[in-house]
Amino acid sequence: MQTHGVQLGLEAREYDHLGPQAQTSSGYRNLFGDADRDGRYKGLADRDKSREMFRWLSGRFGQSYAWPNGADENAKIPAGYTYLAQFVIHDTVQSLADLPDVESGKDWLRNDRSGRLILDGIYGKGMSADPLLYGICPAFPAARGFLRIGGREGDDPVSYRDLPRVPCPFSGKWAYADVLIADSRNDDNLIIAQLTALFHLLHNIVYSELNNLYQNKYTDRFIFSIARKAVTFIYRKVVIEDFLKRVLYPEVYEEYKNRGREALVDDPNDSRMPLEFSHAAARFGHFMVRDHYEINSVLRDSDTGLRSMLTQTSASRPWAMPLDGRWLIEWKRLFGPPGTAGLLYSRRLGPELARVLVQPDLLRDQLGGVGSLPYVDFVRGSESNLRSLSGIVNHPRFPGYVREASPLLLRDNEVDTQPIIEWLETPILGMPQLPREYVNLITQDVPLLLFVMFEAAKTVYPRGNVKPKDILEGECLGPMGSFIIAEFIFGEYWRTHELIENDAATQEAVGKIFGQQVPGSMPTLIDEIARRKGWDGADARFW
Image 1: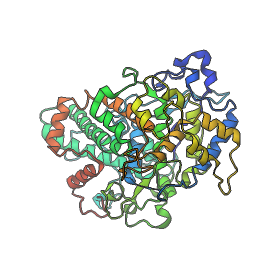
Image 2: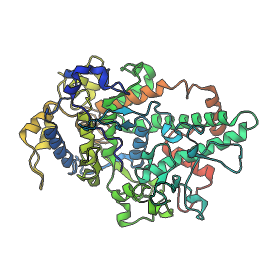
Image 3: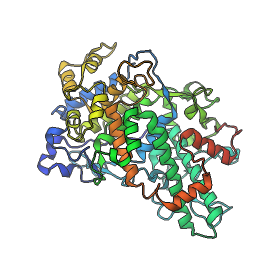
Image 4: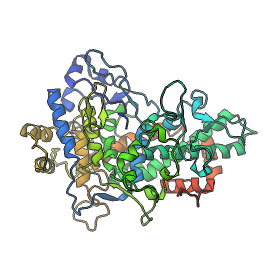
């Protein structure tokens, strides 16, 4: 697993003489605009003590959470959406920390993902600027815009469902240590790699169809552009109508889905990335990860463990690449409808993580230190000048309906910290008790990521005394977490809506290829790919 540009930045007080704009001048800002010092998360002034607190807190996430019905599986969200969440986040943010101060080791954080929700993580800069990502098809010798697909030579054609993995003659690495994809993070684990390959397959299907329709009418460059827009159209439809509908609190989702642009409360003219999204709320996908993935009927024992999923990549196991058939995913197990044989569910959303992710040496930062995934998430957030929880709740643009719906926000805008205190103070065998100083600090200035996960763990829908509940604790994000996610993703959707959804050529292409059956969910998208490739009865199974 890569560190995704781990940023260990300046403490808030070190920015004061520069003014609030300086800290976010390279693609980042705060929700509702740049926050002043009083509106930021403060934490501890002592960085070492702050990190000590976060190490303890991260270890606590490795312990089971006391769910009311005792089950840690989320019956509302199949396991594949964990990795669709990761894919979407990669499509919106790519933090770079490649210009550290040599003496202090402090980083200048910048976001390399200026275009969001438009599949830059698949297409890169396009077939002209990133030609290595693209290949040709014998059926269309003049077409240069087919995305590469990988697999094992000589195997059944259905095995070509992997990323394109290649040997570099200059690197001195194992033969298949490199992947020809636009964003190397999309080979962070076995599942996101094959999810990325799905979108390569979708593009090639659409591009091929458009070549059949338009090769005597339009240039290859134009056909490629329309194919990209058509695939992006479908991808965004899946994100809005399937993914967000599953993970967001229903009242928040309906507000943004039904009211369109009018639901947005942040500045639509400020295109910088809100840190509260990228460095806090968007980390919720880490808490959905399972300990085991039976991705098909072949894998057994340790091969199904999370560590195996994380290491079956070109970076970690180049000698085992390209993937052979036993590692190919049977997608119905990750995205199938309820009742599907072997269907896997994600972990419930709350203060609990897969045990592998809380290993203290999982990740390494630029300073040579190591830490678990939640530890790195907390450090990133606390040292990136996030707006504090109270700074969000008390902001005049914070929606009242979100405050009223949250189980942890009180009428006087205070946070109900009692559930967090009880969790912090519950004795755990083998773990030292958290010092009172840290308990007080956490509950007086709750880290945003911790609040988002606790809020999810306490959220039900409908709220109040209505029974039975459609959504139980931990089966979706809470109102506050949902608001931060929805505000950003819907904002980016509307920012480029004219380019994609309102583009006449794109609408025509989608209509000609899919008619009235445009895929709007991951199950329908995968089923469409399987049907068009003739893989319905494939072995290894595809769908």
